[in-house]
Image (cartoon, rainbow, N blue to C red; front, side, top):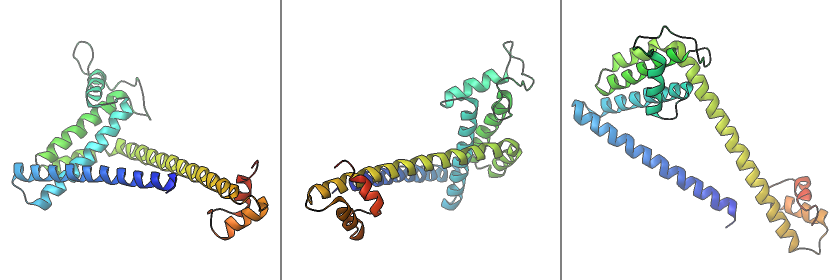
Length: 211
């Protein structure tokens, strides 16, 4: 089995393992909510999904503030909210990110964290109300998340394409090395025509340059 196939299998197994782990964590959370709030499974499931969604948004706001973890986010939010004497900052415009000051982002972060707690306590309407109130900044947050996802997908596709190209080149050269009696043109034509290498004649012929 070639390296590309092995790598794909490993990636698939790794993804399946991660998905299984997340699914197990989700189901465990559902059961905990079901027991704590004495609600039916479908309600616990709805609450868990809501909590996860709000927490994801809060994490994205934390990233916008420059935080790398929850403790860091809390520290930044504290510094952005209070002056040294303990008084509230007046929506300072320092350290603006995407048009929002750190103070504004700190307020949104705290609101999202409170909303997640409300959802965990079964106060779903209160939680959703808080999210709606923050819609003025969440649009930017969601757009940023979407842009990051597109960037990650593009990078993954580029890496996969490069790996495939490298593997095809190696296989073409190995095949030609075993059929030295053929010209490079004839070898490339046969590999393309018989799908020995999944590439065009021109591409395969380029693989053989220098052989």
